[in-house]
Image 1 (cartoon, helix red, strand yellow):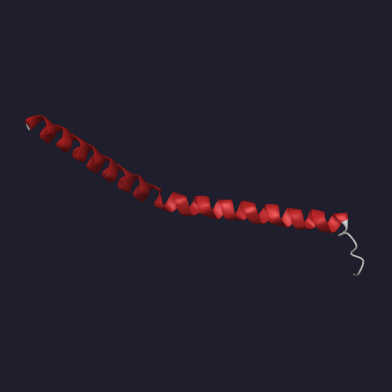
Image 2: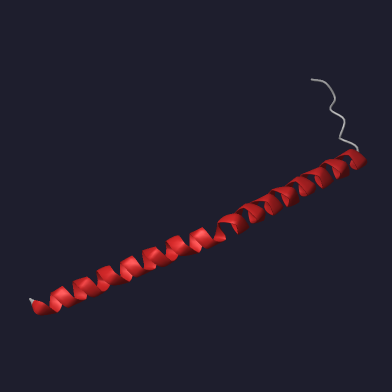
Length: 66
């Protein structure tokens, strides 16, 4: 079994900085993509909410008639 030498501290620090930078870039891209579709997402949620409320009112209204 060969002797494994630990990774030098500056190399580990550099890799950690690259990982943090990559994470920041990924978050920035995700927010930019979300900003482009934000209006459409709100529209879909609004339509779904109105539809859900209409179903609840319809069930309640027909439940009282019978």
